[in-house]
Image (cartoon, rainbow, N blue to C red; front, side, top):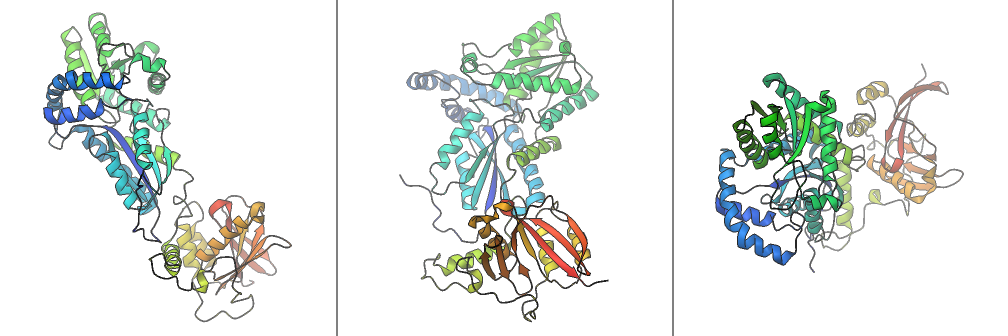
Amino acid sequence: MTFLGTPDFVHGSRPRIGVLLVNLGTPADPSPRSVRKYLAEFLSDPRVIEAPRLLWWLVLHGVILRTRPQRSAHAYQKIWTPEGSPLLVESRKLVAGLAARLQQRFGDDVMVDLAMTYGQPSIRSVLERFREQNLQRLLVLPLYPQYSSTTTGSIFEFVTRELSQWRWMPELRFVNQYWDRESYLRGVADSIAQHWQAHGRKHLLFSFHSIPQRYFLAGDPYHCFCLGTARGVAQRLGLAEDEWSLGFQSRFGREEWLKPYVDRMLQDYAKSGPKRVTVVCPGFATDCLETLEEISMQNRDLFLGQGGEAFDYVPCLNSSAAHVDVMEDVVLQHAGGWPGLGTDRPDDAALAAQRERALARGADGSPARPCPRRFLEISPPPPPRWCPGSPLPPDGRVSLARRLLDISRRRATDVDAQALLATLGAARLLEADVLAPASAHSSRHLRYAGSWCERLGFVAFEPVLEPLPKVVAASRDLNVGLYAIDLQAPVLVSQAAGGARRTSAMLVAPEGTQLLLLKELAAG
């Protein structure tokens, strides 16, 4: 088997994080031919239809795909917009809103894109675009608040099947469900409350897409998550038990599916009450055929035609600001702790140095050339070029304030850059210490410390293990030492020391290593 690689990989490229939002899919257009192609792909998924493959293939191609595409195409034509399929249009707008939010937080280090389980854009095509842009970490976010093997499970299988063909696989995280996130429950509840303010309060009916009963009995947790969703939204609306109900829609075939069935509930309501209902579909992230045509058209006509008095449908969250808030909340929760989202994002200088090291060792196919001394790693250490008390080389003065500002910008909570600059001002730097927890005894932590020294422009490293683990790093304008000590949250501290005022600013570095920069100001 041949695995997909990146033979033209550019060393020093910025590693990127991909956030992949995935929805069900839609036909390319509302014609019977396009609908048939879409249904053939959708209904061929063994997680959607659990049946003997040969028997199901005969039923699908011999019966279903000969009759259903025409009816479904007629239904799609009722909801199709000038922009295209409502599901695709709203999903794209949602992705654009989330991308803008994450761009503000993390710049270009995070990519956000949309894929469809069935149809276009396919999961494979979007992952391939990610791979070409140096994807190293991937978060998959299915647009299904409640997990089911028929939906979220299929996405996980499609993604892992595709990634299994890659030579260099990214780190991978999946969002299993998000129905229990406060941002989601509150977003749905607020949308209902706003609808009631405009149209009046009625009995609330939660409608979820159904699945075969045997899937639930076999262990699919979807039914439980639907009940939890409805109960959570009702609680946030302050509804009593008799003010809301729950049902399932979109059953297919003759076997028993999750009950109660929404269409039968509405027939009963039309006859015996409640005769005024509001229907909401919180299992759908965006409006689609099942919500716009089946609920808002078919079931509305059914209810009103049999004696119902009023029928309202609350749109899905779609691409609203509230839905973007939900997506941002879920992404930040599940991507937390990944390198590249905090203070350890590599800057351009570090990436350039990485590329130069790679090229020096023949990464471009040319013979390896001697590596400049400033890019040598901890072992073997070069001799220090400067010691405390010695004059600074005239060509070696680098603005510490600018370095601190660049580092602090990576994560605003680490240190107040403006306050730090105002405090340190133009004072003369005497020394700087890199502090780490007691686990710094390990050579691994010493290497991390050396890496951070290099990022700050230090040109020499020498590990010293007695009496305390320590790295002495000589720089053109400062000294560095690594000691076994534990520090708490980032702070800015000023204290008197030896007749001079010493100001300390702490920044967080990778793997628990913490950076403490000390600046001595003249007494008085």
